[in-house]
Length: 220
Length: 207
Image 1 (tube, rainbow over the protein chains, first blue to last red):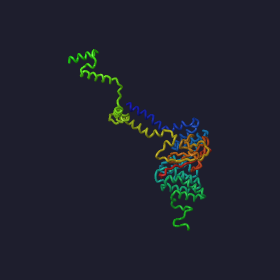
Image 2: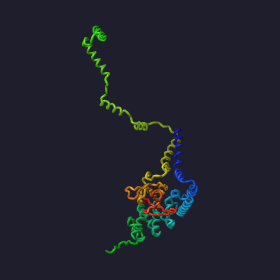
Image 3: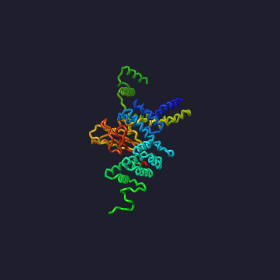
Image 4: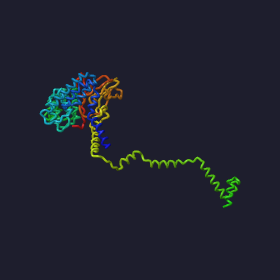
């Protein structure tokens, strides 16, 4: 019987500590004034299944940068609204779709580049397995940020996802693209060069500028 | 025999010297004297004997780990109620699965896992006295992760194990200057009037 009490006491210590650990760590890192400002935002975000950890991180970032509590509250509230819009849009009209926090954050960041949620949703639907698409959506945003048309970037990233191009390669596309741009290539040719450098095949049906059609060789 | 006893009495009384004792008694007396003398000498065991004894003692002594192993491996009967057994299983599972999640993440290098990718951060800051890396992967701690200028060239480097994902970060130079990474894949508005750098971490084998 003493063993049972001992184990029960152990559980009483372990489980609340584990489940409330992150909450307590966050609360202990935030001053009372800031906590009073952000807690209602975080509570609402929790109710709406938003990426709360990303919001907490933004609070901690603001504190580390000595930002006033009111401004932290404004920024976190705005970010929560972005997440809410992204999550709501991605779930609309779709069968039950498992959305990871990273995917919601990436979709919200994509929206800042004026990439429609329908584009992101099509990308999510194209995945052959249940893996996270946080990285492909982020690469999509980075390409659009660099001047690649949304449609072209989306076609490429859908191809990357469908053909299971290793994400380690996909993540390097923006960097290779920058290198080609720096060498004076126009955006379309820079994208082709980036794909060549990473040995990623072109999406089907795409006639990339700067690449010769099959069967036609350059003179000489 | 009677004569020997009388002579022995006379010798012990000091009436006659040792030499006047019969040969048998004299030799016996000399042997006893030698034995008594040897008892007063400082006798030491030879080193070989001491070493041999200590070897045998060492073999007889059982080390603690061995005694613990014997204790734990010896079959014994433990009486446990079903409720206590269920609690034991639940407590073990809770401790195993939940405890690590409650630990604050302060040192990424200490929590490197199989699914993490070691990511190198490099920042050029010639003449700086310190460069720290902070970001959402260290909860924006101002202490962050210290970079090292191993060759005193002004190139500060650190390797951080990170799980695949997208992270925002920045460098803190000399403890006060927040500086984005010019080599980053992207810079984003942090909402507070500054800029964060972005790193995309992805395992090579991940698809």
